[in-house]
Image 1 (cartoon, one colour):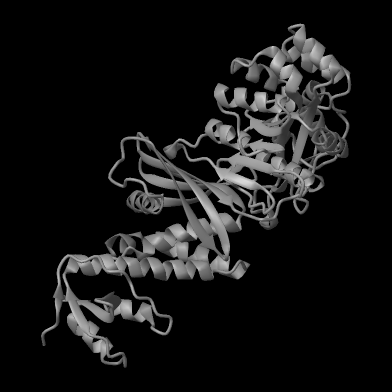
Image 2: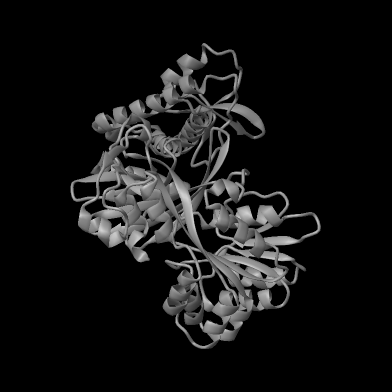
Amino acid sequence: MHFPRLQDVNLEPLWEEETNHKLALKHSLLFSIVDDEKACIVEQETLPDALNYLSKLSLGYPVILVDAESFERLKNKFLEIQTGTEFEDMSTTSDELIEVEADLLEFIRNSQDLLSSEESAPIIKLVNSLFFQALQKGASDIHIESGEKKGEVRLRIDGALKKHLDLDKSILTLVINRIKVISNLDISEKRVPQDGRTQLAISGKSIDVRVSVLPTYHGERVVMRILSQTEHIPTLESLGFVEEITKDLYKLLNHAHGMILVTGPTGSGKSTTLHACLQHISTPDKNIITVEDPVEYNADNISQIQVNTKVGLTFAAGLRSILRQDPDIIMVGEIRDSETAEIALRSALTGHLLLSTLHTNDATSALSRLMDMGIANFLVSSTLLGVLAQRLTRKLCVHCKKESKLAPEIAREIDVPEEKLYFKAVGCKECDFTGYKGRQAIGELFIIDNKAKEMMKDGYNDHQIREAMKKEGMRTISDKLKDMLLAGETSYEEAIRVGLMDG
């Protein structure tokens, strides 16, 4: 029996819903379009099995024989579609999650089978399962680390890392290679750091994943930041800030021009707060433009620009372009350098309301941070309206938290009553044995009033201004953590981690 032969071809898969492709793949029968005609694609080694299965189908497609390499290429594309379809169909039920976890554990148990398998499908499925579980557990980051003898996967849930599973060293390499492939990174390069990104669709949700690969002594490690592109933007009230802060923020947002900053470490909810602010002041008569990296929320009534450094679209370049678009309100995702800071402050000075973020530990430190970037003192004092420093604090699980007492010396050190009952984290099934469930936003709002402006002009440093503002009644992050501790909402350990001792 003679069939047309093709050598070294890159065919595209023909995926038809009515065909059982899973079974066809098992029998090494593939489908594609060749010369504008549907065709069956086979290879020499598995030809009898493929033809035997084809005889049971009433298709009538011509059969084309390709070389082993071309066949493998097409087969991998089919496997991609198959596992992608399975991934898309995953529901968000706990039963499904248990099943996925069972699959994952089975993969790891049968590591030798996995490694000896010529198909890449198990690895694809393993990586997909990792993403699915991370999303189910509400993780913000996936850490894949290489040790001397094995690898480890950890998930950052509610701001803290939690061990997820161990991986065989050989499987680890395959997993990292798979992540590199979907992120368009060079799989052959293992000596230099690489950054990439990918998009996934899970249960109808679009997920943006930022990937960072770093070579370490025992091999590469990968950190993936999961960014869910949600259209649901929370209100300022729903973020959890005390009523006083929310009211004062509303007053600041009423200004026609000036700059409002939100500060805090990575993952403290700064972007969410900014978008909540924008939604509050968004009306049809205002032109609102943002430049972000990445765009985390899809807002219909706002023009959003995605930073792309590869083509020269930085925050500074994006901000310059925005100013030519007749904006009323501008949001810059982050002030990272002196150029962005300079343009931002000058645009706030020339009649625009500008919102942005900075990486500082407290609200008043934003002053020295801007000055370190080379911004003149007078420019900061005349444009800055207020600075909100925020954190996300883990809340104790209500199902398993346990009464406890603080040691007298600790209670005295943090200035809380010694005799009061406090609570500590225990861990149960409800909170995935962490002792915490959910997070609450806490913050301190530094309003640049006349007194603060005078102090800035007189050359006072941010510590001196902070102490003066506290005397004026400014409530700090440390104060809010004490309130949560006294109310039994969080533990002493969590309060310390977030910044109880920072004052």
